[in-house]
Length: 434
Image 1 (cartoon, helix red, strand yellow):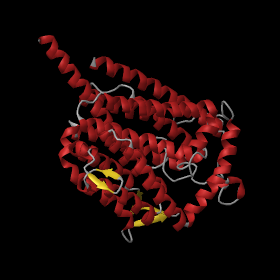
Image 2 (cartoon, rainbow, N blue to C red; image 1 turned 135 degrees about the vertical axis):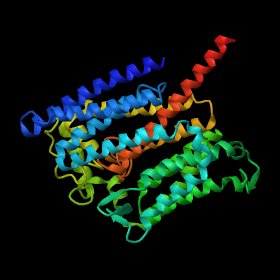
Image 3 (tube, rainbow, N blue to C red; image 1 turned 30 degrees about the vertical axis):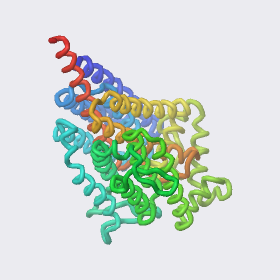
Image 4 (cartoon, rainbow, N blue to C red; image 1 turned 90 degrees about the vertical axis):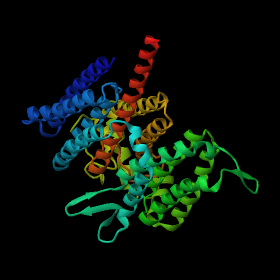
């Protein structure tokens, strides 16, 4: 079974390399009217990275899901090709970060032979997570860009510590809820007409809410705040099976979001743009309106790779990378990207559903929620389902912090999947012996 899984994964990865190589050639023909001279080294680099990742999975997690790695490789490769057509300098940096991400992917598989081994370090991960969240607030270290203080600069290198913080906090919350899920599901404390769990067990939940508020108030980052708080509430709901936590969480976040809207001008601007983008199409709404025209220009089949004209859209390679994909690949290509994310999320939830241990189940739900909700927030902002925020599209958008954290989450999901199938095989063997 393990051999068949890995052979399936290898076959899918070969298909992905062929697709990415063909897309790279088409993008070069569209922008420079010639086949790129470095197509050979490019294909060798992509094939080498994916083959290295595959061999490490074959050795370290042989029973893992064969779908996860090829989907991530496809999204990452497609993002690189689109970024190449936009800015070759950024494409070189993205290639470097892809190599770093694959290295981090392999390192996690090596360092974490069993996911339950990290369960007992819950408070260590909690401290790491909150320390990373607070790091951008440190003077002379944190930087404010586009109204949000979520960046940290160390020499020439800049990164978003919140991308790693979300993984650490997902591990902490999964570990905490394993121990407290039954107590949190009980209603042993009354507050007027409300029946609530014991306040001492609600402490970490309230702390998570406070951290979400802190991000909005201190760092002025509504997107990351929504992502973190959704992570906490979804994991709490899955652990306790109480829908009331979803309702209470939505109400608390709504109050905090309203307060943030009243307090910060850039939040008011984004909400106003969301409600009526045509009120100021040459000012605050320029970016989103220009993105709509670019996507409409793509039509059903797209303008072709390398033939887009998104140069005037600010931060097209990061915040608005989906616009470039939709214009150059059309509605069909954008739909395929959405389908890839759905497959990725569905595979992650399948890992959670097949997990026997509560920690494994909650961690898989948390990691999948991070990937899925982050993609939903940024795509929803572009198509005006939500107010536009500055989160990145996982695996596709330009950015080292997001790319490395996405590969780390993928490694943890593969580790969880491998353990699930290994336990199932052991049970089948015991039944056969019995």
